[in-house]
Image 1 (cartoon, rainbow, N blue to C red):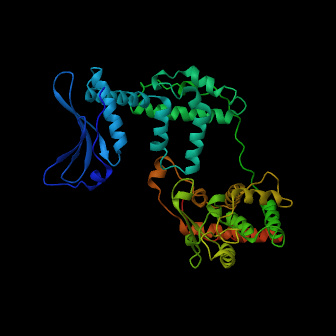
Image 2: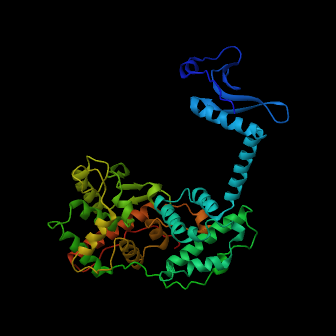
Image 3: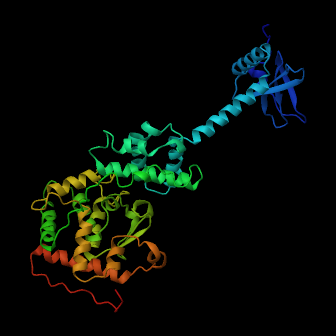
Amino acid sequence: MRSTNYTLTAAKLNAARGQEKPYKLTDGGGLFVRVSTAGTRTWCYGYVAPSGKRSEITFGQFPEVAIKAARDLHFAARQLLAAGVDPSAAKKAEREEKRRAALADDGLFKTFSEKWLTEQLGDATAPYQRKMRSLLERFVWPSIGRTPLPDVKPYQILEIIEGRDLKEIPGTAEKVRALVQQIFDHAIRTLRVEKGANPAAAMTGVIKVPASKHHRHLNETELGTFWRAIAAQVDGVAHPSTIAAARIIALGLCRKNEALRSEWTEFDLEKGIWNIPAERTKMRKPHRVFLSRQAVAILEAQYKLTGGGKWAFTTSSKLAVPISSATMNFFFKRLSDVPTDFTPHGLRGTGATILREHGFRRDVVELLLAHTEKGVAGAYHHHELVEERRGALQFYADLIEKLAAGANVSVLRPRRAKTAA
């Protein structure tokens, strides 16, 4: 093949500007740059195809496609011509092959499940999304990731959930099975798989999951001991922010990370309100905590300590990071005379149980816990029960003080209007 004497330079191409009509800058051997009226410079190769017709193929725009790259593409096209192949037809065939390959990949379990993670779990919390992806990466994709969706069989799901990696952890095995079932349910809804052909659904009940253990909660006597144990840490090794956060978790019946990652902008201490944003709640809905007098006093003292920063609870001298979950867990393990299996989350069950025992309505307690009603009730009940919630948390704070003092408890419930329970 005869070599080509190319003539274009970077300086000449950079100087090219759009004119009233498009024009060409010839490089050599049929390779040229077409300059549009807007000044776009496109590499083109004009040639006579094996059929005898004049044809043209483009290689991209300058400077994205540099001079050397364009000439290499030109040389490859000339080689195809020398072999009797039309470069333009070859490019179209290659593009079609890539399209078909993409369509084929789209039907593979791994590709489809990755899209499912993005599209169906887009509004879930980041930790939950990472957890679901991790289950797929560790247990599912290595086995059936490259298998077309319709070709996945129940025995393959059985091999996964009864395999060596999941054999000793039945709870996780069942989570994996249920996750795969959800993905196939979506594949059925989007007509990728025939109705009724869910291989994971066929394995329902195969894994016997032990009954779940609920978080340990405290009775009233133990709650008084717990509160005194926290007070004993004031002059100990625990940081004041850690102590304050533990107290707010208890008094607000909130989840641990809702408190630990709280920002000062969320609090209105004058009104006694804490607004937890949706992105930090389990149910992905804003939650309002009506702070007791005791909780407000704790937060006012805490503001003097960390009010110069973003985070309400931080042990950093630069106020740069919130308290970690591990720090709070370790703090609970260190408390004297408190059950060793008691965790921060157990404070929610403790408060809910005690409030119910003292006659507070179930729906009031559920709202305090930021639980969401399901079914028809959830669709129509949008009440806030503000005064009852505020009264319940104030009652609970007063009760804790009495219990911590070791006195005979005779805390009076706030009165409320008669309402059907």
